[in-house]
View 1 (cartoon, rainbow, N blue to C red):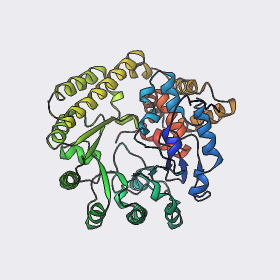
View 2 (cartoon, rainbow, N blue to C red):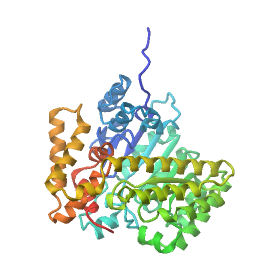
View 3 (cartoon, rainbow, N blue to C red):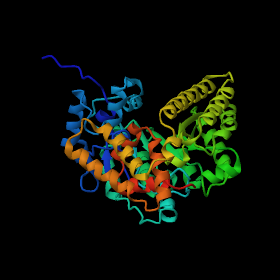
View 4 (cartoon, rainbow, N blue to C red):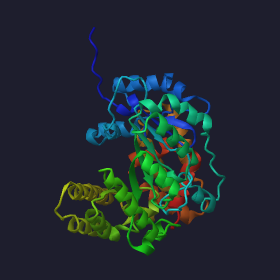
Length: 436
């Protein structure tokens, strides 16, 4: 019997699960439109062996990316297969165990910070103090933790994000399971770097952690303005501890830096710090909220950022320095793409247009990304779009939010509509209409 080779291979769909704070379970971070199941309505076993996951695998096998794989589908259609989301899961080594090899846990939004580019979806403090909304309640409980007994022994990778992972009691319960069932498992933590106590240190010493710490500036005033409630000196002390911990394990620390309108001038100091301390620096341009994005800067200022980064990524050295330089060259390429987009559509061209016309343009841009969707699905998205646009009553704020959303590439924006429920989309839109 001859077996047909699949057109595309997605290791995430084949061997990964992602648990979201809402209880929704997906195959990966890039597919937020096709839910495999919900906890506690479905057990982990039911979701993994369920019909919806099998249908997703079959769809991808046949080269059909319509089951929520919007991001990868867009990349493939644009000839950018190398940048498609499924390639980000190439780290997965497949086996024949019949169990997931990788699980990503994002179980709650507990956080001690209120970062200006974040939202209540990822910080309960923002949800309480800025959005003034009802707290999001995580459905995950001890029963969920116990269900992991059958899955932990077969895992090769487990990622924990938040919120701030070191504040999640449920993560410590999962790590206690891992100590017994799979103590050498590779654990990947994305942290804001502000939580380091005896409890954290004891778990670091007992398990196999890899750490990514978020820092956007080494200038005290700017860092503490961006990462509200954090204290730079304390974070840097913690960073030194984390770096030494990983060096003892012959690993490298990662620092994630979100490039915004507020910190791009501080990047040279951060680049030099990471190079001097042999730390991997992972930059990412913020797209949403729109007010924090460099997309809204004038073209000349964007060119200045390119010059600044080119000037400060010339240092020669080992692999880490070379990789840091290479990542910022990718950022330079993205900034050049922003400049090209601004040539076609600039913010100033929107200023003379009414909110109604801006709303029509935004709606048309988003619907243009749904050409292959059914009429029913298009109508559902249209209702979502209208609800989001009409969530702001103050005309000036609504206009600012509309312009901000129009400066976001429509393929990225429609991804947010795929990923987020209506309440979270509304908060994102309102956030884009204000300055923080």
